[in-house]
Image 1: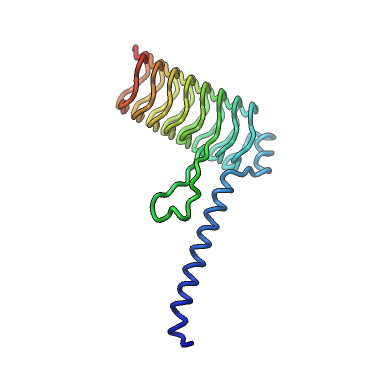
Image 2: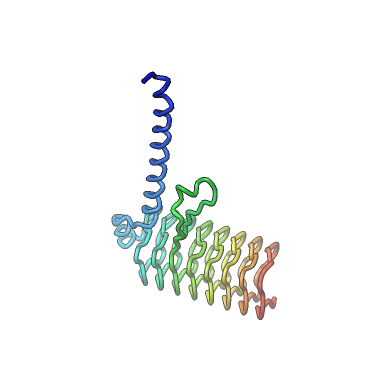
Amino acid sequence: MSSSQRRPIDSKVAIFTALLMILVSGCQDCQSRQTTNPAHLKQLLTTKQCRECNLGDANLRQADLAKANLREALLIKANLDGANLAEADLSQAQLSWDDFDTGWGNFFSCDVLLEASLVKANLTNANLSKAMLDRVNLEQANLRHADLSKASLSKTNLDGANLEAANLNGANLVGTNLREANLEGANLTHADLTVADLNEANLEEANLTYAVLNTYLSNANLRS
């Protein structure tokens, strides 16, 4: 076989090998995002200092993490129900992740939705600025005075959550469930509340300057 005949075959093999490596890499990435690093978990529970830690799928239910440093930590699928995260630093932390691709990259995507659970968690005075919280379950969580500025909370469940005096400046609240949530005195300037559910929510004295309010406000308290 001449070199000119081998060249097309070699090219096809090279392309196939490259695509296979991309696929394997994508699968490994999906798995790593939802797998706890045991050393990181021990470090968190021992020192409460765990910046950029991988705590995916960690069981931290009712854990005492007050004032913990979890800045830029990976907490996808972590169970933080009832955890005490008062004054914790979760800025730029990632608590949700999706890998859906409807284009040509769909073959290489995991097609998964992964999010943490923080039902009834105490996040009083916590720093969650720029955190990824899309679709996270924060039902009845205490976020009083929390900093959620520029955080992404699209389709997040905040049903009955306490967000009194919370800073939600520039937050993404598109499609968020805020039914019966307490937003008294909250800062919602520049927040996007498109199709958010604020039925029976308390927005008394909340700052809605420049907020996008294409939303549901049935029985909401908007007194200033």
